[in-house]
Length: 476
Image (cartoon, rainbow, N blue to C red; front, top):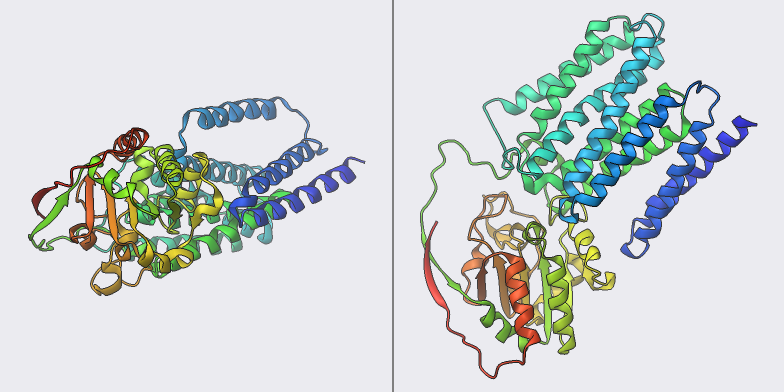
């Protein structure tokens, strides 16, 4: 009877996982998709606890309590702006679990003496991708949290040495399939994977983190699928396969959104300062405006497109953005949000933050939906975005951004940019948009600036607002 219940629970879980993943295709159904996946996971856990192989439950209960405490604390105290970090650390937890299961299974088979070739293949695959994901995810967490230098860290022969290390690791994996009893190579492969996880993420900059997180998600899923094969757990195999394939395709889609090859993202070290490179110093003039100047322009705007970026996340300004949009719409303006696929530090980063601020889903537009509308837009309000609105992507062939589809913010009648400084984005490319005559640069913390703007709008609109602006010469 237990076997029948277990099979039914696993089948229902698998169906719910597929339906949940399908529902994530649209913001309107995403919440339902998460709920379906949560129910599926609950059924999978309950079904697993009914397996006849379980003799004692005390360690399972201890793990359940500890994991629940960690998960609850993360949910309560990690802000939505730290969602990329939370996802990175979660990938690491999953990979640790898969790798530990692989180590225990190998040890219980007397360090490979009683293991068959097929099982060893699944076991080796599991610990190979699991070990890479552990340290790779931790390194991604460190870069996102700025515990580690977020810009690419490069050194001579880096790509060659990393590829060589991976080839050696794969060679050991193949040898272990033939000779599973070579225990020192098994544990050496895990140690090499842990080292490689650090080395492959070091040369990747913060701007490419969305692709990296999707790829690490794929690695964790593949490790979980292999775990399912090793311990004969069908639902783990299905869930891992779904996770692995969806993460891989998502990382490919993110690369395409930047018009860059997958290998360029992993090995290109975009944003790194090349040793010996000469930096041209040029005096360029920007116009510094105040929130009062911005309020004067926005007061008469009939159409506004808001472009959020990582700066909005850092400033935790999503609620202030939503409030400003509501105030503008009360005055009869049409307000929409242009969301670039690689804005932020994880896939859907801006969507998550704006959803937290209760921005209606139908106001969120992808580039292909809204790019043609910038020409007839009064104001493009750029909040902390840089590379995704940089015109250099269109014409500057030597730029790392060249060819990347961008948002046509420069085609709006007026461009307002909320930014702390004139520093370039993670690609290291100066933004010509900052220096155009129709661009209003408003320096400072985005949340503070937007809060000031909201307070100005809540007051009686002034008859005249100072249009005076301070001209500054900026030496780059």
